[in-house]
Amino acid sequence: MKNNQRGFTLIELVIVMAIFIVVIIITADAFKVVLSQSAKIFRSEESNTEGIVGLEMMRHDLQQAGYGLYTEPLNSGYVGEASVSPASSFNEPSLTVPPRAIVTGNNIPVGTQDTGSESGNSYTIAMNSDYLAIKATSASRDGVAQKWTYLTYLPGSVTPHVWPSASENLSTNDAVVLLTRKLTTSSNTLTLVPDPAGSGSSSFYFAYSNSAFANYSTNSSNYVVYGLDGGATIRMPFNRTDYFVARPSAAGKMPTVCAPNTGELYKAVVNQDDGRLTYYPVLDCVADMQVVLGWDLRNGSSPGTDGLIDTWSNADGTVVTQNNVAGFASTAEVQAALASPSLIRDSLKMVKVYVLAQNGRKDTGYTSPSPIVVGDPGEASLTRSYDITAAGWSNYRWKLYRLVVSPKNLQANQ
Image 1 (cartoon, one colour):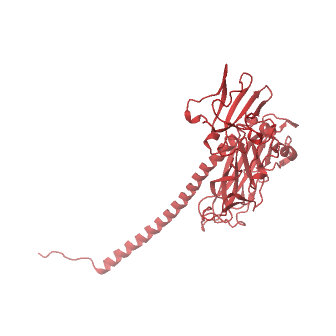
Image 2 (image 1 turned 90 degrees about the horizontal axis):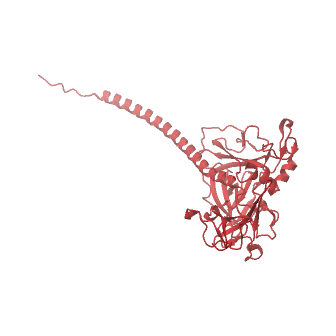
């Protein structure tokens, strides 16, 4: 018997190889599509994560606005606040008035530049974005600025309270301010207490120690102590951090994937040493930041407060009343409130911040809807409407981040 030793013919091998190659091509093409979509999703989620983490810092600072600020005028001034532009535009008008918890600027002109904070680098305001300055003793990344205590009284002894956790206690020689609080049925005032051992503009703060406040009796007053940002010198009796969109001039500071003419959203801390800014990037590839303020300035149709938001304004206090709704404050009233530390404390109920940021990289197969309103529906007149096509950003995806915060240290929210 003969064994069957017949093999494959050349034609059969060619047909099998052709089928195999076609299957490989189809599989590779499908894998390429999956890989491309996965990359887009990854970049989108990366942007989302960055936005959530970065904007939580802004939310925290907004909630802390007004924390540790004195409410009564000073008998003598202090050194000053920001020493560089445009931050200096949001300083207090006088060194003896109480500080405003929140100061805002509307559509800062493109090209406004800080050239004094970093050697060899400047920061230029981008895209006419709004500007937000937050003042509070806790408005700093320094650990001392996050600490506070109060004075306790025993016959013959006045000492700072010691917290159970050592990490929460102030250390010897930390720069601190001492405030005395007075509560009545109609008011809550905080007065800055000067250090009698200081002189001139350096008398507004103390070097912390267990014996620094021995001469202050707490029988009739409630004394509280707040830490300040560290530094060789202290120039203001509070801390301050600013948020705005800007473009850095130094190479490598701006991601190359960002759409043309976008900027970085920065948290910029005003240094106690010299009034310059320390920049911390919060969110990449930002087109705009807009601020809307919610006020309680009317009691029905009359001036006053009733605990309800009756007026919405943009960052410079301009009010847009639609459909002739009664009970809104006027633009003049809101702008007067923005200039008044006490009215900000008593009447500012809510701060909305909208950030329009790039979501992922450029995608030539995608066309963005245009225009995009940087605000909630119906707020185009209080914010801005972006023509994405005219800006040359049609092939980028955009995400609108929205923060709505009721600053818990303002009297209006207590």
